[in-house]
Length: 111
Length: 114
Image 1 (cartoon, each protein chain N blue to C red):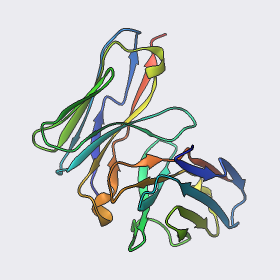
Image 2: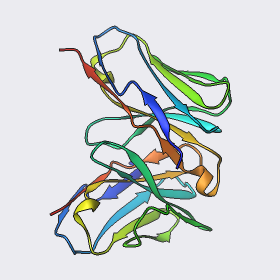
Image 3: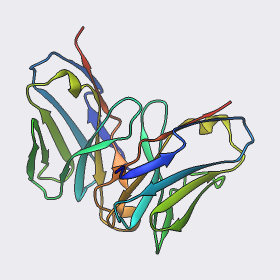
Image 4: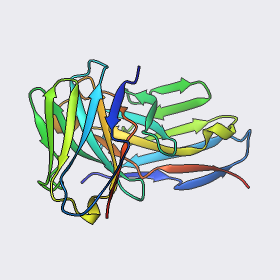
């Protein structure tokens, strides 16, 4: 019954590696998002995506790329991981930009 | 970019007390949302406000969309221990494209008085 799910919950990896985080929503929403929460708990938008448009926050490095195989999934790929990428990453979904439902988060630790 | 000022940053509560927190912005928003985040979990939507002046309740929680569209407050009445957590306000300019993205406040951390 989980509305927005993410895997894995925890991800520990070394600098320079490439990793992916998966996200699925079963709410029938048309827009999905990735947010990053830093160590001070500040939440910031990284991407928003529906089947027409990908909006990228200009501050996001191009090592991060979202991939959407279908409307219910938006995965996050990260290349050449850096120490500063350590954070909690949240997937979210909504109807056409309305109130967002968030996933449980993926805690990424880069060593 | 846009920023929201959320206050207080943290507060201690005693069971039964009423709690207030608010957010202000230099920009106008069309939607204000209030979320709660428990440790190790994602933010959970508490209240959504869509019209200036709107006052909405959800159990012991009440939130208002400021008449200027630049502020919102959240009140919690008769707090209980499970109210502890981090509360976030979020503003949204519009409904499509980048205007549908949320701008978050920095959170208000509620803890229990020792």
